[in-house]
Structures are given as structure tokens and as C-alpha cells.
Length: 248
Image (tube, rainbow, N blue to C red; front, side):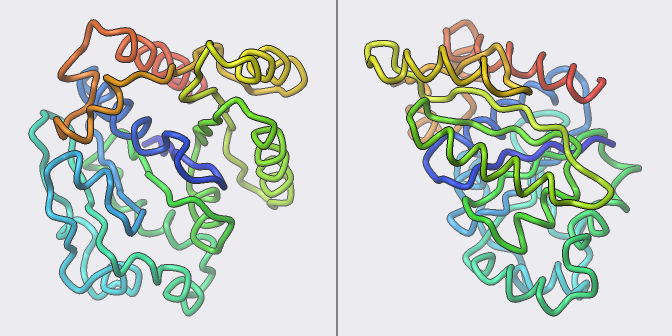
């Protein structure tokens, strides 16, 4: 089983759109996929039309009072299941803090699912926290969407420094530009310069498109409702790069 995580220190950069579309594409390719929505806002749960409510909340799962597979819901798509978020996930750092070896907690929770799933996608809230540390220790590939602005350099460097401080397991980092607007000079400049000075950059960039924004209206992946669109094709390209990075 391989674990992908969509993560960035900053919010509003396209993490959920990436997790939802790549999870859908992986399921379409025949992989048994679980998407775990770890963001208390529950955006991925909303997009898949699943009520963002876990009985007992995040506390029940983290503490082991409720088996993780009992909280998993099916989606409208074959091979794709969802572990929905709810607002209690805002307290996951506090719950992890009381756990033994909290940085390994998510990996331990996911491990029993190896017989049921080939791939797990973790849709993460923006932060540097105990939860994000646990995510990074669990993930095989870290998918990092970046809006091409000056602050992208800073957030990517912060993340690289954070991962470099790990002992033992370190995820592969695949950064890529998201919500890129080629009409903006700064976007063009950063997207041209940053990959040359940083290793691990994807060649695929996800454009800023109104059709991608319509995912929240249609409550479906763009790769499902508009598979021939430019946005869907770019997500398909990104999935091919992510598969290669994971050795799939």
C-alpha cells in the first residue's frame, strides 16, 4: 500500500482539488483507494456528497475507541472510499499529543487497511503541527501544490527543512504549481525560476480555471464531469508523475 498526502503550510492552494482528482483517477485506473479527509472544514467530504460526521468524532478514531474501517463511507465512484472529516478534527493535535509516539499514530491507524486498499490519499489541513508531522511520517509521497508567488519559495523551503529533520522515514516530495495564471507576470517568473533551483518539481502545472472551481458546485471531480477539459488533462498528467514517483 502506498500513501499520498496533499500538504502545504499555506491554505487555499489546491490541496483538496488535488486529492479528490488524483484519488478519482487512481480508482479509475483500478486501484482500491481510500481518501482520508483530515481537514475539519471537510471540503473533500462535501465534494463527494458525504455527510462530514464521524460517530464519536476524531477522538474515537485516534484513541482506538472506534475502528477506522467502521467510519469509512463509499462514494459514487467504483474503487473509491472516503473517511470523512467533521469539526472535531480541529482538536486532532490535542488528541495526538496524548497518544504514544504521536508522530507515528496515523501510520499505525492506516497499517491494518493494507488488505483492503492499494492507495491512501490524505487531504491535510494547512499547518505545521503535530498532525502534519504524523502525516509526513506516514506518507510515501508528499504532493505539495504551490501558487507561483514569492511566498511559495519560503513555504517550500520551510517544508524541506522540516522533512530534513526527520530520523528514519522521509517522504518523497513532489511539488507542483497550482492555480497558475499565465496572464500574471509574477506567476510566469516564479514558475520559470523556482523549478530550476529546487529538486523534486513536477513538470505538470495546474492552471487557474473556472471549471476547476465548479467542482464545489457540481460536487464532483473535474476528472469525472469534464474528463476532456484542460484541467482534467493536467490532473491526469500530474497523476502519471505521482505514480512514477511512488513506483507504481
